[in-house]
Image 1 (tube, rainbow over the protein chains, first blue to last red):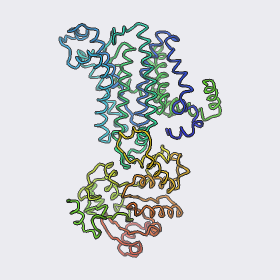
Image 2 (tube, chains in turn purple, orange):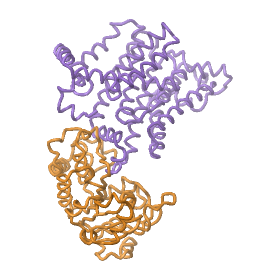
Image 3 (cartoon, rainbow over the protein chains, first blue to last red):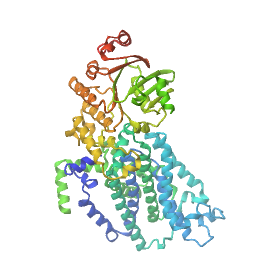
Image 4 (cartoon, rainbow over the protein chains, first blue to last red):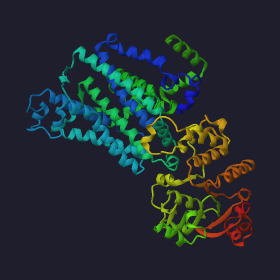
Amino acid sequence: MDMSMRKETPLSGGLAGVTLGRPMALTLPVVVLAALAPWLVSAYELNLLARFLAMALLAMGLVLVWGQGGVLSLGQGVFFGLGGYAIAMHMKLAALADGDLPDFMVWSGLDALPWWWVPFKSPLVAILGVVLVPGALAALFSWAVFRRRVGGVYFALITQALALAFATLLISQQPSTGGFNGLTDFQTVMGLELGTPAAAHGLYWLTLALVVGVFVALRALMASRYGLLLRAIRDGENRIRFLGYDPTPFKVVAFTIGAVLAGLAGALFTLHAGVVSPALVGVVPSIEMVIWVAVGGRNSLAGAIAGTLAVNLAKDGVSSAFPDLWLYALGLVFVLVVTLLPGGLAGLVADAGATGWGKRLKTLIIGEAK
Amino acid sequence: MSAQATASHIGTTAPASNLLLAMDGVTVDFDGFKALNGFSLTLDRGTLRVLIGPNGAGKSTLCDTIIGRVRATSGRVIFKDQDITHLPEHEIVRRGICRKFQTPGVLPGLSVVDNLMIAAKRDRRWWSSFRHGVAAEEKARVADILETIGLADRAAAPAGQLAHGEKQWLEIGMVVATRADLLLLDEPTAGMGPAETSQTATLIRRLVGQHTVLVIDHDMSFLEQLDARVTVMHQGQFLKEGSVAAIRADADVAAVYLGRAKENTHHV
């Protein structure tokens, strides 16, 4: 994805301008429409949309890590889970009187709060923990691995093992983690009464604002010299090394940003869904996250958001009608995208833009927007 | 000043201040196969040297060892009076050595100008990549190199779309853009026709003086156009050194080439 080319020839890139070149024409109406969603859709649909937008934060992180950096991570669920558990632990503790224990700990026979729970009583620690715990773990882990020049499929397998280990650990430590059921039954967060329309709307807007902010920030990062070098390392790590650059920190930064966004996504998702559990953070969810981005287009931020919404809407539809079919359907979609649409939805849109019909459609859309 | 002592120990005829690179008895052992066997070589600043030898003589391994891609089993590589034998690759490059690979190592997804910009960047530490703007000096240098390698009108094209010869020139341009004191050019004319080869020879001759250049190549007409001192390697060891004409007339060199492989006879 050569962005300097895009800038010089904004008209020949078709609708790719939506993702990278000239975003305002289409992006602004979409954001306005999304901001009005609380009055346009039902409370149930708004909650779904809020969850999916939270996941889109993680998906945009994968664009940086996988699309731009060429580093396939099958362990994003770990960072998603760390963010989710950090905020969930705070909410469990905030609802308690001093000295009381969360209900599941009492049932498991614990008589004191585990030491690593204690700091999360503080809202500040919890909020910092949402981003710093996944960020620090990702930075240490990826530095150790990339420094040894482990990459490609080996890195993917290591991250998958990490996801498996994390989910297994959560389940096995039931007295302090809530085990298979995870953490749920939250009442308030930062003084906000969960379950009220005001809280639902506020959290939705917070999520939307973060999606917009991260979109803008990542676009700038991808257009910077750092982004250029990240893509260069993806395409020829050795050439870059023998031009005097050390590729390791570039990849560590990308992986860490991806993990921070995953942690943020996990925390927001937990707020919207009212639960965080091992079933949301293990191997299968981590692979699903990669599929959202593959479907949307792994080099396009807008594509990643669209792919996340599309796959999760489909999941909601398919799995409520035919619960057993979802994983087969997802696998089929993945195979089709990889074989027929390597650029995902974003690539499809860009290709359509190159044809006559696509150009006419683009003129129509951008003309209307003006 | 043990590095100074080393330089004189190697016994170069040039004054130590003029010495850029010294390989001191370097052996590279690949599980019993000695790709380099006690090889020594010195290069003075601003000179051009050509390295030839039959396939498997260790020419590419020599470049790999200087640049840190392959590590010496024994012996040392001294660059600007400092031991670089065990430095990380990117650190060796930052000291002033850059290498063109045998198969063109351009970044296919990036434009020609971006390839050069990355190479021309002076501050290659990761945190400086977040800074905005490009130094005017770097821009001017890239524009200058684009002219020199004849790719000014292809500046915006993805490097992957260039013809093979153009890729070779782009990579030479990238190596030059790093401002390295020592340029290692591994088969810079591979896949080129006679006209392109001749242009490449002119290009390389213009680099000498400002840079020290070590060229690996087989093509005899190319060597004659370069008109430089030639070092001949054989089985990881030094065989001969001399002018192109002297090497061409040398019986030992001829024996090495003829004895090794008949298909090499048209080269030397």
